[in-house]
Length: 401
Image (cartoon, rainbow, N blue to C red):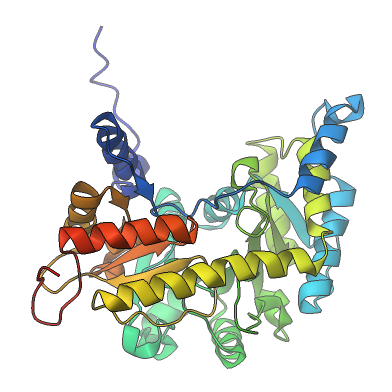
């Protein structure tokens, strides 16, 4: 029997196509054709989770006390580990009982926050380009997106002065993300001070995504929103163990900051999920307690790949700025090619997967995101395939090399 008369809710129909799902389809077809894919599309860290974390998880699995439902608000020990880590990394003091909440990955929390706080018709300020859940979550909640187009000449920073006064007065939430996915941009402390002042003036909730702060290079130390005086009054900050600790598949993240906002998100989550398996929370505690030498190893790995790929792309005509953080390069499409066409062209000609910039919103058109999730041998192979296929960057037109 056909169920064609059952249609998805309007909130689903309003969502733009999810480019990553489409990429998965294309990758599957390419593999069927026997292509040796070099997948630099997803932000999926390569390599194993640190061994102490694996061992902690295995030990916790043997404890029957972990086999039941976990506490809705997360285990007390994990929440304490989160707040201790924040104090060590950023000098920020947080109450583990009310200002920290474990999440099933930061994506889940960012999306559910929108459902918890956005009413249909509420205006939500979202940069473009940005991580998709920053605008998809509000769309699902029925919010009205006011896109703030980011520009290369402004170093991909939000220009608060570009937001019309009448929009600022009506806006309820501002999502933002530095170090940035997808652009790799970073923001100085002065920017955070400005955005806090802006949010306090217009009574806007700040939602900061700090998922890439530990992947920083060359002595750069990113700023936490919560370092700024008064930020906790009007903001929350999301983090994840996916990137820093190679735990993407474990689905562990957290949110910290304003206790009232966190309580609202907790209330929603108690009606939708039971939180993170307790054994995984024990493993996550171990990750957050790893010495900073581990973080330095991770940073060195991505910095080496960054330098290698920037140098190789430079030989093919690209001038890619040296990013201070994240696991991505934000690369211009050749003149005359759109993001999707260029990404498909690269995939079909070389078997290398990159993400079209328009997956991150209209402001990402004309760029692709390349993830540093392969070792230099594989990155070198990708560059060689580019060269053999005549894929390069020229100011006037695409030419063969």
